[in-house]
Length: 410
Length: 194
Image (tube, rainbow over all chains, first blue to last red; front, side):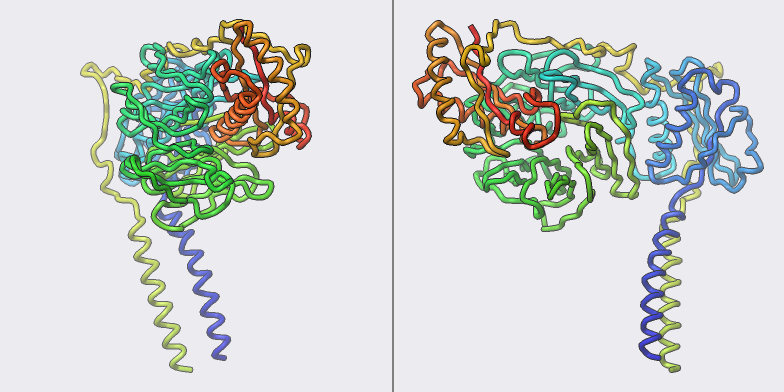
């Protein structure tokens, strides 16, 4: 009897915990239905997509249980339809006939109060997804939820389109907007030049030597930064945009350098005779993590800028050839068997958490707040861009057009 | 038995209390959003907040205006016709294997003649498609560097040699994803620039 009671009690504890997690998850999310303005519905080919993007953005925020049924009504109707009285919020929206404007009203069903209203516009219709992204970011902010500004950032990626040919694209996180930004020849390793994405770097392989350029988004001007024999990559940019970690090889030796953007000076940070690449600032930016083959296979190391000593910081895998950093945390890709998976670790302990478990998952990147992870999932010749929200456990995959992704930044 | 029932009752009570506390922690704050943000002009017209400062048309940066094609210097890849051969490498390796030393020696003889006419030589290091962005380009560079060192050992003037890693951007074999195909892509090629 005693053993039976112990068994039942143990079973109950575990199952109770599981139920508790689910209840907690549901309780923490607000129920919401959308109502599209019937006067402008269907005005453009993007109107039906706008509903899907709004729903997707609300779900990806991790803070809403979203009604996926498309409803229509008068944008200015102050009444909440009876069948929606069990919701916590109603989001009325009007996607304009030009395809470049979005107006919305967020209404709290319990008391009918309009808790948020705003109008958004973009300069060009192809960029319409940003109407939704910006609106949902603002709604989350108004409701006091965790910041999801990562959602409205532009993504830069380069992809191969032929032998010695690549293109650099700009896109929103869902890829509903995607446009070529650099075309012709071999142009690689795009990297945003600052936090507000007003400029970016990329490497052109169309000259005799690889050449790093900086492009200003507002004016479209392009300026040569530096060229180097061998290879040249802008691997990371400091938070204030004043310093850039470069991988370059003026003497044929791939090492990490730090470029001072303001005065053009550079200093060599690594001197190993093998491969040192992929430098990323970490912590207060007095340290870097980077990929090196100093013990034979590629792995992730930590180094204080100015110091000669290095330490291994990836505590899993022995073929880890790509990394990213945020705060004290690191992301790295691990080749294991026939698959490549992404692991989360920290420079402070041996903590390791696998984030993917099968397939080929590469190029992991932290969001600007470190809570969401972007990566590329390769399946044959197809690429998908994946997201994992560490805070809300939301995940999503968006298919990309054909072409192997060479590098990505957001 | 009574003692067991008491213990069970106590634990279940604690669990219920814990559950209730978690619900309170995750409840939506009903006071949020009590003030509304209603941007509108004094005449009632709607004011739009532009979320897209860089997106005019295709953008001034749009349509790939920076693509600048191939570099202008005349480049004459000798290929097999000129007698130059490619040097191949093992998986994740950048050392020249003994079976490739004869190829290097033959290439060195051809390149010395070309350099004697005033040419420079671009050494391109290539990789298969299984590597990861920067590391793969570094691997290609190390292959190019190994070839340069080998050429120098064979009497080629190192000051006339330029190293460039092409990573996995220019595969020789694209017909499959077999090891045989990948092996053809792990190579060094020489291009003579007059």
